[in-house]
Image (cartoon, helix red, strand yellow):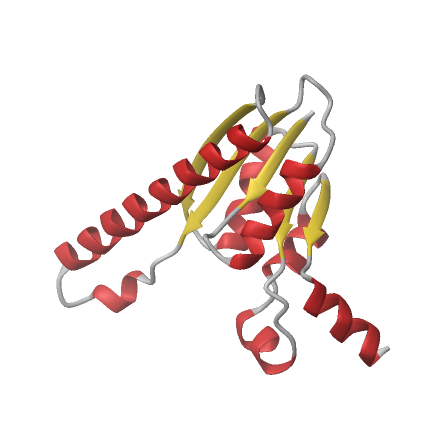
Length: 153
């Protein structure tokens, strides 16, 4: 089994990592931690070099976060096969594409829990991925999101 874990350094992706760490996995399960890096190139029209510098800083930060997350998983689930990757693209498209090329059987990701205008403005990455991905998707929500859903029902 191949599991793609979408992370972005947020609390919701930390919950997804904790979820993965506590689940019983079959011995041959492979994990890949994945982050998307998205910078609006149009914001850097003054100097091309400023865009390139921002891209390198973002890449370095993402790799540091991925390395930290890999270490966390290896400590919590000894003996697992875990790698990491990143891509320069919008998160929702990048996650779906990586799941396809990685041949993932499962995507695990957190949900930021946006609703209303924020969801309309920013969209829901988790919703998009769960609707478009060709494999199963496990969306890990926090207790606050679960409570809000039950209160509004």
